[in-house]
Length: 489
Image 1 (tube, rainbow, N blue to C red):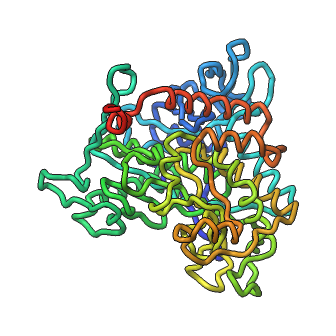
Image 2: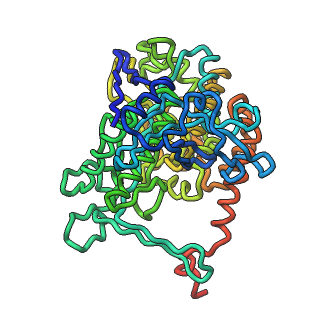
Image 3: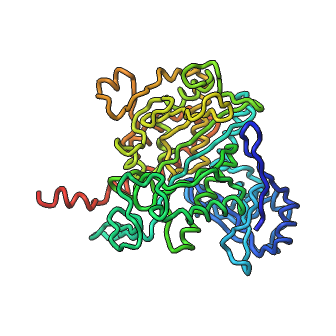
């Protein structure tokens, strides 16, 4: 296993050692690697891969790419008449896959996607969109940005479902921690009572520790904590240390890759499906971000009496609030996402900002006072079913639009928004997030201009098409609960 070296600067930035193509070839030889996994991400946000024997790997593929991709078979990419595409590995993403046995020892490289026959960068490649967002941040006068998503997920002992039978439908989840656990081999966790329990109630602590080690030692993704989350039945969170936009999107995909594979090796199943269990908290992906100018945090102003937040950061918040409804189609892209965005489960429903208020969809964490390095904006709307490259890029686009237009976020709301009357919410000009994927897509269609320059128009069209197909597929099918409600009518 290659141990990637890293350091954290005095400003709180994470600096990881990266490799040049020649160093990757040397590592493959010295580490006895047998295969190289070339990984890339499709538009909906799923990792895909092709494996090559190491003797087929040469330095030229880092510049010329590898002609191994039929883009017409990848959801959201291209039509059949333009299917030949290239994968171009990024040497800085090199890591060895820790759980693969030595006889087939495998390294991985995350790839950019390029159009075939000299077509250049592929505009719908999510990683390319994220790179474009970084360029726009620099063009706006900032040197870089830092991103820290809080990716939550569930780990179950098993899950089954019946979906394609026109005469039956349903699902079943088993978990040693579930509130209805009766086997007596583990302690059940009550609904909404799973936050920070000590082992043996938290039965997944060792599992998460293995994931943390693999993330750090195999892939250079550093964690600063792991813990059980609020829900019953195995809700987990591994906090990853912040990094730059594309690197953190790579890290988020790697996070999903590791947590799912480690669970599988241990006879369990991990999922980032937002709301698999009715009546308890869903999994979210609160996204923390800050823009920097050299070693100075552009979001920090010690003179601000409310949250030590700069004027630039307030405009950034204003942009996110202005476009929150449209952003939902990108950061909450599944029909299941909108089972999460309901009152009562800590998920945001209303468009507002605040210093510490978790009922607002934009929050300014206030754990420390006077800490420039820690000042950031937390966008609480996203969930981990999203494509992180597209999610971070879309948040960037909204924030930059706010900075450019000097969008006023209005006054912060420092009370529980869930408990406010509709009249009070109207008085405070508090908006509401979409209630369905269809509504979110309609919001994006009417407010996509802010994405211009980062998202190509044809990518937005493809996203709308895929999400509406998903919405119609679910809406067209009878739901099991409908039998309970209506069968006797």
